[in-house]
Image (cartoon, rainbow over all chains, first blue to last red; front, top):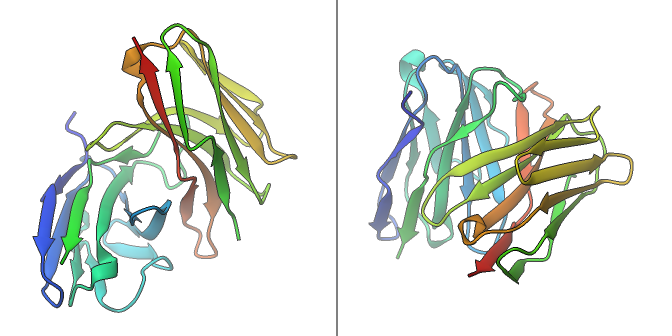
Length: 117
Length: 115
């Protein structure tokens, strides 16, 4: 079974540019999550998709961030325009169940390290 | 607001030693608690998940306990090995107003096991 895959693994962009991160969840997982870790801070929740619908986007920092999951398969997270404080590691995770359990855990991707200069 | 704290931030031990990592959380209204492992440049791997009604879970050399009323969890690693070197993250699952599950993470404990 392929795991959660994220592209790119690293991205370096200048302030003001646009970046799009992609996440391919495990096949059959309706639940897809985005999390972010900025330097020196905890990993924090950004949003949750159930299939193509946004279940909760309360963690999105501001309107420069746009997440989509057209067709309920892969998801993209666009940052436009990027600011210095957006630098960090962006993780995607997927699960079969809405709430993780022992036999249906949350699977994380390796993350995309974003550096805004 | 739920906050998760992990102590210590870093730990270095000789191979073979038993060790304990600590995690505390401020709001006892959690659905479950998980311990994750993160290797450099990699994603998070779930090690143990304890439901809020449970007191502990064991997997191999790992044992995690949960005291929900006091807001504490410990991860015990027996007979540590150099391959255990990684960052260990504690996270509690809460349910948002939108009905979504959300993990609230601590900053992690960076463990180094020296040969």
